Length: 448
Image 1 (cartoon, rainbow, N blue to C red):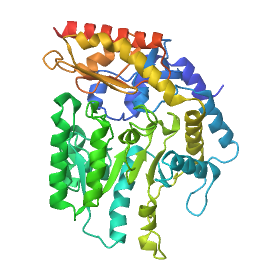
Image 2: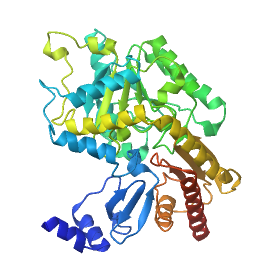
Image 3: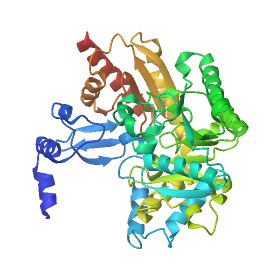
């Protein structure tokens, strides 16, 4: 037995917490607070369940930050990675290529009917956003339109935490500390179904106003189609996307659809933007679910027009962005297995049925006076707890109380949401509704 295996078997839950706090700097975490509420050590995952070192299990209701589509330790994805590992784990994609990357790019192109026929590979969602922003600007510059270097984003939008991605992110807790480092962007009102029917019209009017004034300087608009996730699962209608596409065409700016969280079937179609039933965006970014929660991978899909704007004998006109693991063969193999599952196992049809089970199970919350704005878009379900009831550290208290209900869930502010793996049946949906309701009862009882 190896030393690492021995340590894994012999150390307790508390030992792993202590060692993690001493050595690991956890993401999206104030480490001083983590010392009070230590991280939950997870020993293994199976299907939608995560198991700790003391034998307790937790339903992964947020899909481990929205990445896990088909549950943990999925055999099909594991087999694809193992088979690829036997032949080629990685080779640089500059000057070389390999079958998993080619096949993945071809499959993604086919999903857009060839409209987005070129795939650029990256490692994570923020990197994909950086690439899309750089490509947009550089494409305009290669066409002689150097002035088009500004970007438009939506109020409360989230696109990642690297410097470029933060510049088009409007979530203060992530952005404010780094504001002196960021390029300025135009932040316009976002549509929000909770604010009534005229919210979309106001958002579109605000966008038109900015485009009319600055279109000669604007490279692209970036949006999260249908759901602004980090904002608290703020939802809007496909009609907004159709209008946005028309405005971008009218004022000759690129449209970037950030589908990192909402792509891969989360909203009922593989790409959320499909529901607009209009022409495709100029760029789509994908990550999270594309590799089924196994290996880091992100992608930028773009058009022939953008691709051709870089085609030249001049090296400086090329898109020279890279990282050492670009197009990693193992990650691409996992993504191919994910896309094959969509193609061969009626995933989207099954998701729609699972979404109905969730809707039915959570329907009683519609009449719960403690809850506001119960809403759903495909496999994303959310509600807000009344502001006057939540008290201090609501999200943290809810998360901890939910563990006692065998549920791993992390609210965003006072928004409780579920984005579970695609493994729901009617019984599971009822379990989730019961666990969430019991947690709500516990948290609000103690808040009172």
